Image (tube, rainbow, N blue to C red; front, top):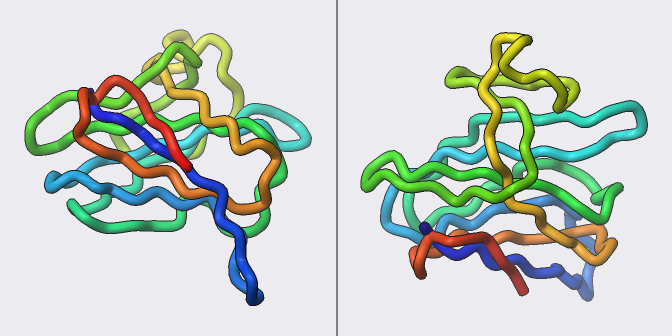
Amino acid sequence: MCILAASATGFAAPAAADLRLCNKTDDQVGVAVGYKNAESWISEGWWNLPGQSCEVLLEGPLSARYYYLYALDYVQGGEWSGSAFMCTREKEFTITGIEDCLARGFERTGFVEIDTGEQVSWTVHLTEQSRSGMGGK
């Protein structure tokens, strides 16, 4: 398992406020994100990030304090997972709701909780150190 590090991004000049993930490993990874909007829980995937690259997962100012991430190493195997369960599937997806994943034909996957501290922009760094979680700065 790898470490997930996160960071608030402070800007002196105008810049985009987003949820961004940087893959600091050498391997290609698949990433899914979960969050709660005004109406319900949403899980989305898959972003495929080559090693040593960054990508915006959610554009615009963050509207929640907590976001949830799951990542899969396509080359060496392994995953960055946690105990916040949400629905996923193998193909690209946007799923509303986190209940009854299996009964609705989805997989039930454990996501890592990311506390953004109510910042409007946040970057998560996926690293190879122990592959046990996700973190940030």
